Image 1 (cartoon, helix red, strand yellow):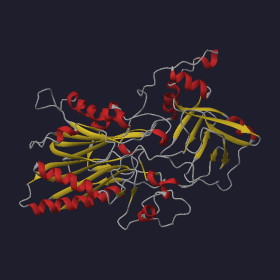
Image 2: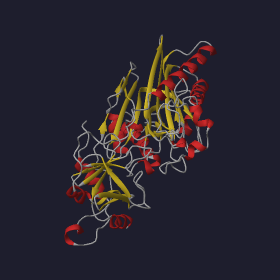
Image 3: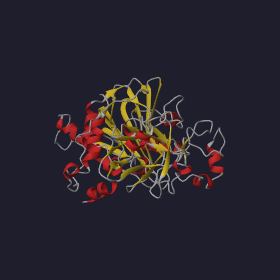
Image 4: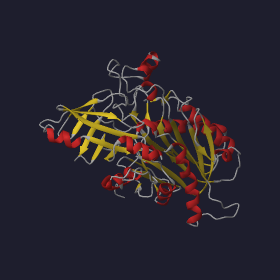
Length: 475
């Protein structure tokens, strides 16, 4: 499906404030800010894990306006499942049922989503879709069963509070396909990040890996939104916007050796507290396992992830791992074979974690030969731009310079609320605020402002003054 056009972004931003008074002079009024106008983007992404396993079907859905998303795993036949929850801030649905240890297969789908607690409705919506589509019914032994977990992708990482709702989850469920899993910042990992503890603050996403040994199949899927850093097998940090004083070839051991100084940094954009994280994952095998063996698979693989994500399962993470058996292969004849499965699965999960990290945006630099903004451009760009009830950007002209300040409740990345900062020109409509993290501010003809244009962009529309917008949204 094609990506939504600019008018859908405009409609959502304007929804928080009635603009009827703009022409007639009446005060703006608050209106309902629903998500009905958002267009689901289904199964997007250029980097895709391909594998042969018809028993698993996967669908992803995204709202580009967030951006945020959901990933749905459905099983051709009900599967057996166990769960292992670590960390201090979990957000899950139906995990208590998985702890009962029933030997009969019960699970139809596993749903991973963004949106924090608001995204939990994605899991129950997938179960409802099974009922609506006639896949499951109302008999006690035929109820559609979905379990799932969420990550936190709200707060200061984006400037709106769009979440993956039931409508998006059902669209992803109905578009599920076998043998394809988008990697990187797609699906539930659409606005995931990692490395916040050390101020790395890099984009993350969802990763997957598959291995087959004889008839044995193992697949690992993960959404990495961790407070810790993703670590390669040779000990390097997979991605980090590092402090200039740090080594160019940064190793995770370097960060821990200097901790906690590395968490403080010397840049105001580094957060004071690493809140809002979580790594959620799924390990699937075709080997039929006893509930106790399946639980041990979940525990061992989850424990092994502390090698790939460091630190792991902190107070500010809500890590949860689901272990699923499609039971297509006879159970192992001896305990050693079960141990071999667990060891292999842990390695496949490390591969999945490494596959989650996308290419990071580079620091913006002036384009060679690009025309500089004119005085008329600066006057046209000045104004108030509304991203959501929580975020508004005020742009003004001072002499021959453009300046900006966050005039809502939330900073606009390195543009804070305390004082204006200079927007340094890159090209005629593009500006930046130099710092540790890339920041590009693009003015789209004066009607919109696009912060960090591209895959993780945030769009604000010119509207009423920031103070009026905030007051209207509060009423």
